[in-house]
Length: 487
Image (cartoon, rainbow, N blue to C red; front, side, top):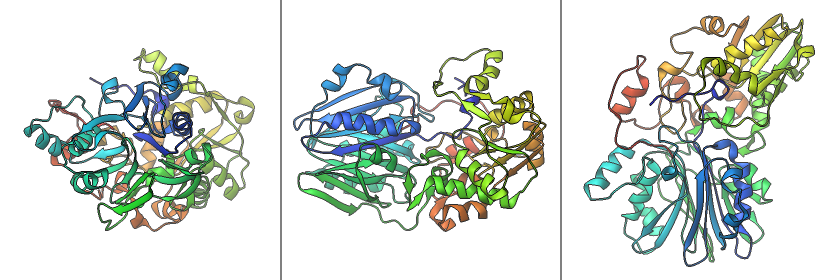
């Protein structure tokens, strides 16, 4: 079945946000709810919360936004306990249905019930699933999250620490995980650190979250990031840490810095708003242009637009107003309504644009649908020139680590020069940020990051079939696998 991506959704998508809390005596479900609100940008398709009352795990989850899933106060009233796990999801190739929503819960024969939330994508999920099915394990979903949970469920051990020590080395790919049992919360990060996970202190309690903005929302004090390959277990005895997989190198996803994470979050010791502002400054140095006004494609292009304006000396204005009430849609409208999608999302401010030479700054271009329609919108509003500036290098390769960049044939930059891309989107000029400028802006050496979507150098081995499917430039007919990833 084909998947329609609305024009205003023409961005890479991360998979999800996770939040865990151990705070006896506090309203952990309500705190988790607010934490998920802060992480809503990481996934808008489903949400869920699991709470332990010391005897059993109670879960509420459904398809929809956080506010839609928890729209009935009685749902929250049923979630009482001292520790909780929350998850908000964006599916990649796994389907968006109730069975795939998280947290997922499994009964371990020695530990008891375990709930898990997952951000990332396993590259060896098919191998693990085949092995488990040969042992008689029956799967209920098409998610690689269930593969992780079933593997843990089949791993013997008297406690969570032992089970995780034995099972986590089997996983390959990108994953940050949060677990809860009857009495413990645990956080896990893969050995390369693809996906973020941080630890915060809240009074006598502890919080795990995908981003520091969630800690700020619940007034938890940021303590540190979970290290690549590290496991942190929190319970009545305090915080215990150990290394499950030795990290030989780091490969943090560069798109966390460029787009995914909220600009008020901190990662790898850097504030993301400041990093993105520096990207804009580097872009202005690299490709200066004569213009009357700088605008951003809100909200993701705004920090870089500020930096571009500061460096270039061109005034910045709000040239596009973004509707705050447009959410993801699952209808497949007519062609005329598809073309109207961008007008639902953005409306031009004509006095800012009319008769002006406009620089518009965005963080990235994937398929080019949004960029083309935005250029048309700016010209309709009276802009005499439109200069597109992109605060990242062009995307040439798909992602196998949990980002919804499906295949090379979807990427506008594949097989085209900048001049040809510029012609496709209808701008007067187009420039991407060079890699050296990007690295300078983030303030870390290049070998700390995964840059595979730019250069094709994947830091983990990719199964041949997956590679053939995603790297093919021409569509081909093939049978769908029985189980597909999508945490």
